[in-house]
Length: 203
Image 1 (cartoon, helix red, strand yellow):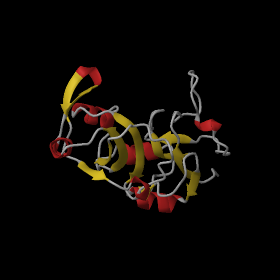
Image 2: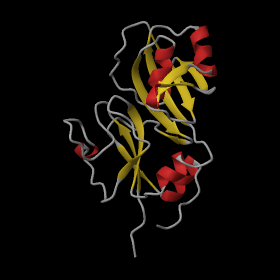
Image 3: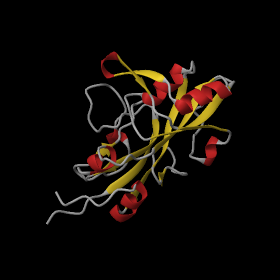
Image 4: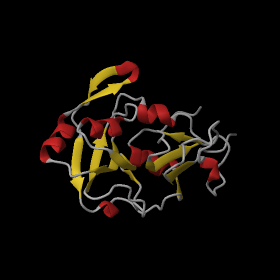
């Protein structure tokens, strides 16, 4: 009888890829001081310059349930950009901006939730790595899709540069006060409830 699947929430640090193995000289998940079980992999990867909530599991069905189902699932990012964001640019981000996607195709992002945040520490532990010189703005952006580097491309489209990008939640699964590099193991029933997905059939 196979052992039950296990689920982990990691606050992925900056300059680490969402992989255990790479041909490049980069920080890896295996560098974290934690004994992950065999078969653990990341769901909804973050690139090495992005930080925050990363779900790891031994359950191979979760990617399909979460990101390939007919029901969209919300992902929320705390984003630090250079300069002050004007009301006009905030409205443009909320209503849709043109970005380039795979193949150089122009794509208009659908309406999404965007707001200015004055207290980023209320949503996660941002640490001391402030990379933008004043003035800068923290934004909270919630999407139900994830084109390649979409958030970065969106803020670039309104002439701002993304300085930090921290994923703080997927649906009701939140980073909260989990420190960068720290891990929280969760039960399947709880994590599926927070992610708003139904139990996967046995493999």
